[in-house]
Amino acid sequence: MSDMYQTKRCARSLARAAKQLASAMLLALALAMPGAMPAKALVELDLNKANVEPLPIAITDFAGDQVARDIAGVIEADLKNSGLFRPIEKAAFIDKISGTAGVPRFEDWRVVNAQALVTGQVTQESDGRLKAEFRLWDVFGGQQIVGQQFFTSPQNWRRVAHIVADAIYQALTGEKGYFDTRVVYVSEQGSRLKRIKRLAIMDQDGANARMLTSGDDLVLTPRFSPTRQEITYMSFAGGTPRVYLLQIETGQRELVSNLPNMSFSPRFSPDGQKIVMSLQQDGNANIYSMDLRSRTTTRLTNTPAIDTAPSFSPDGNRIAFESDRGGRQQIYVMNADGSNQTRISFGQGAYATPVWSPRGDLIAFTKQSGGKFAIGVIKPDGSGERILTEGFHNEGPTWAPNGRVLMFFRDSGGENGGPSIYSIDISGYNEHRIPTEGFASDPAWSPLLD
Image (tube, rainbow, N blue to C red; front, top):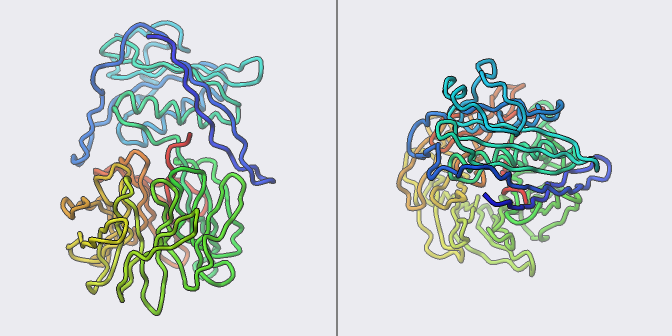
């Protein structure tokens, strides 16, 4: 295997005082070792199966100080939370391998049924940077699958861990990972009658949470740009609901347009050059698109109903939305110019908040029926509807950038209760809560960080 250089720019973290993000460079160097990557993935993914048998994987403590062990811990948590991997308890390890030097005793790892093995170490360079190394081994094949080194500033150690987890995920499944991402959401504090709602951002595992707005104005429906560290959202600043843009790096806020009527449910086009949203007029709402360069608007629907929650397909050619034009909320699909508006949901209950998968093969939705709220998926032609989870109040699905995992929020109800964010695999298993400080709702997943 020849040496290969890759660069990755670290996500900029918001400075507490200046509210700016400091960038740092990650340098990845492939570790040359004998053996080639297996011809096929060790984890075979079937998105239609109700469950996937997790792959037993051994993740050793990385050699080095506490940061080294912390990096290994984040990698292990990422892989475990995906539902595709089952980390083996370290107490069962026979081979006490440390660092990345040498070849493991594969027979010792076969005894504990490890099918994959991760080794690593973290050291500090003379210039203060961290050097994090890892190797991924195919235990039964007796060969290295992938090995890399990363150089970064010490404060970016968690991001290194997520990038390593992504590399392992991709090597073993054949698909891109989703761990090196962030989620913007609405942080909620206080009682239901006096709840303060602020925009917040966190890593996909709930770490590094930061507030983006002060809480002086009600904020709703934040959505990530697919091309920039920028979000669009609705705010009641000034007493009128308007759509805004917020630059995460600088905290700069910009009114999209001072339209005469209430605007809500904004979402970016795949190229980040347009926003599609709803405008309310005379008791009904229609969908409009706006070019962010010229600020010109184009009306896409024209009905006496409520048309809202638009979401572009990943190729930008179509838009899914919800409408009650048939008497109850249902999901519709139309071309990006508003033509060929077609209903695709026909089940019992009301359908809302459609969100197109990054793969283009599915549309996630919220369904209300029989006193319960469910999160489900449906194909763009209306076939293959599946319910993934249901409960007292589930709402607001958002896709991981690889299209395999959804986040949503669930409200526990009650006077002192509130919403929490959960994730679930699109085959309907491995549901778990994302830890947040206080209540949290309306998550929106970022694309993979550059």
